[in-house]
Length: 175
Ligand code: IMP
Ligand code: MG
Image 1 (tube, rainbow, N blue to C red):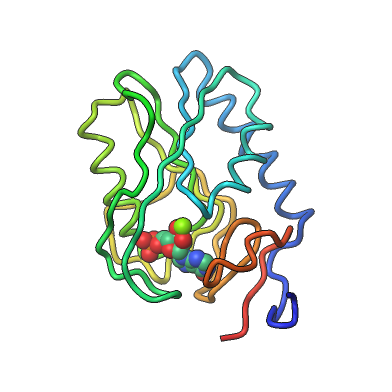
Image 2 (cartoon, rainbow, N blue to C red):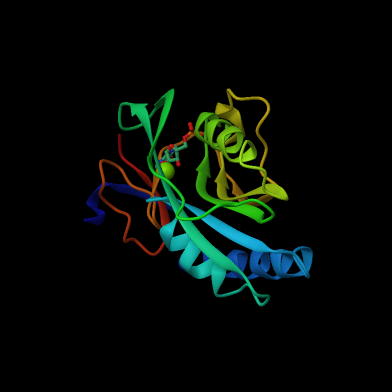
C-alpha cells in the first residue's frame, strides 16, 4: 500500500503531539460553553477520534457528510449535504472539525448553512491548512494543526480515491 507514498510529511509522533496541544487549547477556550464538535466525514474521523480524547471538558459530538463535486484531487466548489446533523444546534458552541482546508469552498458553504440555524458560535478546527490554494477568502480556521505546502497528501483519514485513510502518518502521494 505504501509504494506510492513519495515521502512522509508528518509522522505519527508529530501528529499526536499536535492533537494533544489542540485538545488542551480547545479545553481551555470552551470552558463553561456548550461545546459540540462536528466532524466532517469521512476525512476527519481519525483526527476527530484522537482530538476528542484530549478534550477534558464536557462535550458532545455529531457528524456531517458533504460531497463536493470534482475529480479526485480538486473540488469544483459545488457542495451538497449527504448526511446532516442529528440534532438542533441552537445555543451550541460549534467546533467544526475538518481534515484539511484547501480551496475553502466546503467550509465556506458549511459555515453558512450552520450559521442559519442559530448556534451560539461557530469555530473551525482543521488538522491541515493549504493556504496557497485558498479561493474562499472569507474562510480561515481558528485552530490549525499544520500549515502545509500545495501537495496532495494522504493518511490519517485523508484519502486518494478512498484509499490510504488508515495510514497513521500523513504522506505525499505520487501523482
Ligand atoms: P476544499 O473545499 O477545497 O477546502 O476541500 C476540502 C476537502 O477536499 C477536504 O475535506 C478533503 O476531503 C479534500 N482535499 C483537499 N486537499 C486534499 C489533499 O491533499 N488530500 C486529500 N484530500 C484533500
Ligand atoms: Mg474531506
